[in-house]
Length: 81
Image (cartoon, rainbow, N blue to C red; front, side, top):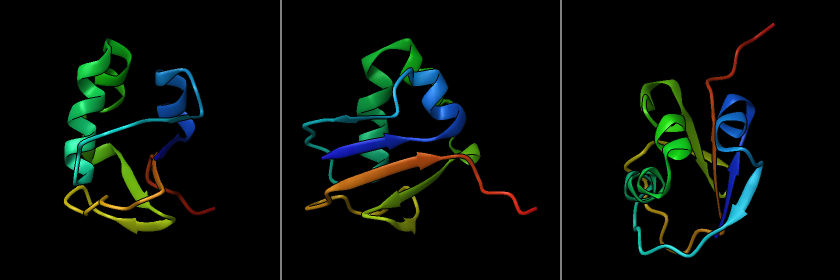
């Protein structure tokens, strides 16, 4: 699956996207796998309340299933202007 990172999440991880193989079945499990990779991932996912997630371009929560998903995107909350 493709994992996309936006704004400061991308800056902390150091890349805008990557293709990963995972055994995770939910977004939360995917986050746990990513946190365990390296310190830069742990820093990016340290405070989940500061993040939003979309699965296949649908905004969802961290309990959402990623079984069969093609894309998961992480980004900070959007602000209006």
